[in-house]
Length: 256
Image 1 (cartoon, rainbow, N blue to C red):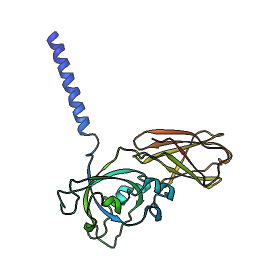
Image 2 (cartoon, one colour):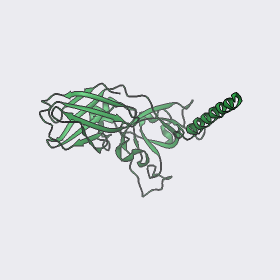
Image 3 (cartoon, rainbow, N blue to C red):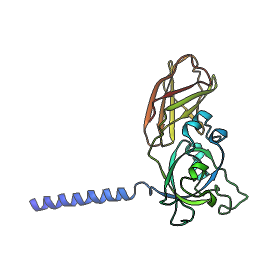
Image 4 (tube, helix red, strand yellow):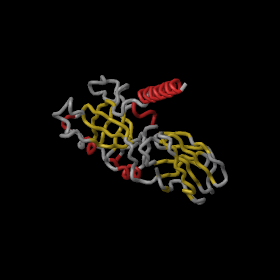
C-alpha cells in the first residue's frame, strides 16, 4: 500500500511538472521580435504625435526618444504611449549597427502610414504586414549609423514606466467630453472610466490615440478617473479636476 501511495505521489508530481512545462512552453511568444527601423528629422514639438493626438506638453514630457510605427504595430491607435526597446541586428549589418548592439527605449507617438505605390522592400517600409519603427533621429543614432537609412532590428516591450505623472486634459463639448489621457505606463492604455461628483463610474470610449470620450454632462462636478493598462494594472485618480474645471484645463495625478 505504501509503495502504491508513493508511486501515485511520484506520478502526480511528474504530471504536475509536465503540465507546468507545457504551460510555460505555450505561454507568451518570444520576447524579442523582428522588425526594421528608419528615422525622421522632425522636431518632437513641431508636429509629431498627430495620429496619437499628443499635445506639445505631452511630447515634450516624453522627450526625443519617440517613434512612429507601422499599421501592424499601431493597432488603430491603441499602442499610443507604449514603450518598446529596439536594437540593431549587428549579426546582419555589422557595418551599420553601433558597436556592442546598444538598445534604445522609445515611446509610440505617431503612425507610419503605408505607401502602396512602393513595394514593402523598396520604400514602402510601413506597408502591412511589415513591423516597422520610424524612429526619431536621436533615437536611431543610439543604435545605428544614420547613413544606413534603414536597418533590421529586434524589438521587445519595455517594462519600465515613464518617469512622469498621469496627465489629463479636458476637451470637447459640454455633452461630448474628449479627454487626453497621457499615461506613464510602459503598456498601452486599455480602458478609462470617469466619475463626476453626481455620477457613477462611466466607461469612456476610445476616440483616437490617447483621446477618450464620454457623452455626459459633467460641468460643475469634480472629476475622478480610473485608468487600466494592457498589463491589467489600474490607477484610480480621485478628484483630479475640481468642480469649476474648464475645457482646455490640464491636471496630473500619481501614475503607474
